Length: 148
Image (cartoon, rainbow, N blue to C red; front, side, top):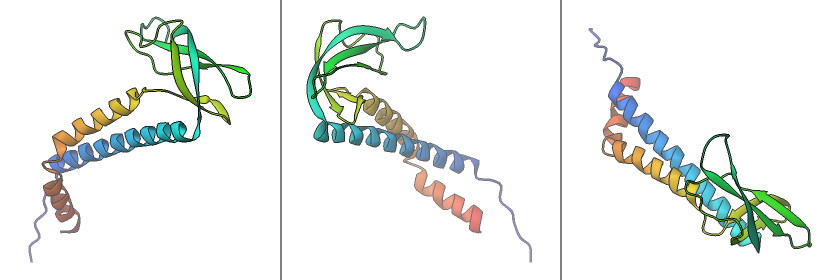
C-alpha cells in the first residue's frame, strides 16, 4: 500500500497563527478593561492635579502626566503615568478625576483613559480581520495534516 505525504500546510499555519495573535490581543484588551472597571467599582474616586509632564524615554516627545492627589487618609501621593501621548492629553495645572486602590496607591485609573484597551482591541481586530475568513478551513487542513 502506497502512502502519500503532504507538505506542511504553511498558509494554514500562518492563518492560525494570525488568528491566535488576534485572540491574545483581544484577551489583553479585555483584561486591561476589566482591571480598570474593577478599580472604578472598588477603588476610591478623587481629584488630582497634573503637576508635571514627563518623558518615558529620553529624547522622545510623547509626554505622560504626573498627578498629585490626596488619599483618603489625608496623605499626598504623586502618580507617574506610564501612558504617554503626543500631543499630551493633559496640561500642567489641569484637574483630573482618578480612581486608586487604597492598598496600592500607584494602581491608578484616570477617568476616561482607555488608550491601551483601544490599542490592543484594534490590533486584535486587525489580526482577526485578516484571518477570520480562513480559520475554519485552516484548522481542518491542519487536523488532516496532523492526524491523516
